[in-house]
Amino acid sequence: MHHAPIFPRYTRRAFCSLALGTCAALLLPCSCLASIAQGVGKPVSDEALKAEFAGMCAGAEQMLAGQRPAEDLRAMFAQARQAHARLLPLPDIGGPENLTYPSFLVGPQYAALYTAMREHGFSARDVGKLVYDLAVYSFEEQKEAYRANGQRFFTPEYFTLLQGWAIRSQQRRYPMDWVQTVFRGDGRDFDIGVNYTECGLMKYFASLGMPELAPYPCRVDFPTARAEGTGLARTSTLAEGGKVCDFRYKQGRETTQGWGIA
Image 1 (cartoon, helix red, strand yellow):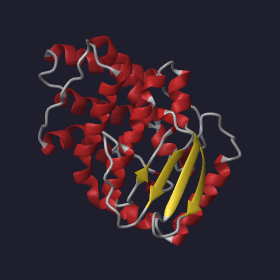
Image 2 (cartoon, helix red, strand yellow):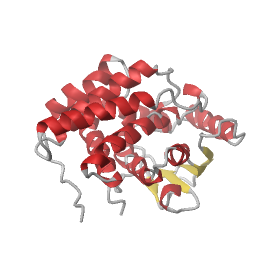
Image 3 (spheres, one colour):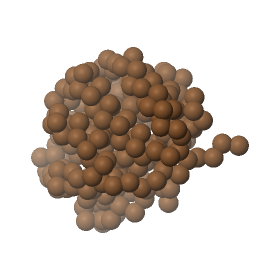
């Protein structure tokens, strides 16, 4: 029987010098921390994505230190970097004008890690937990940027941006894209609602023969929302068999869900 590895804690300094250092040098948010509150950004080149993933692998290698012999970890993450390079360029979903563009960038990261790690006895869930833990460690170092994203998210101007993004998605111009609706809440239970009826990452992972990866990027939404202060609550996702991904945001509410959902 396979037992999921227990990932050890390690210093924030070590993580930041590895995984986040690359992102900072490229002036990029780490794409495993993506959210629709980031707004419209700039296109990210394949070379920048490779560099970011190399930093992510370095952080992951340190996180898994002691789980496997050091030479095995080096070989495994070298294989992951090669797999990631083969997955680029990504299918087009409209570029940075699409607010889910940053989220789509995580697709080859998960797929490349899984390609390499499953040969060493790691499951899709293990990969998901590894990326989740990397994300959680990183938020403290970028908390000001993420909190600013969250404050802007609830402005009237940003809601207009969200509405336009959702309307464009319903045209289904890009086969790998998400499809969603955006609406105002009652101000009591939630302020902004987003219902996704199609998921770009589900489509992407299915196209690679890895549908089992699909539930795990969804779980990073919770620590992201906690960092941004957007008060996310959710009861279902497409990736876990729901009819819709029902995102409900409430300014000032604590985000209590996490890896274990609850």
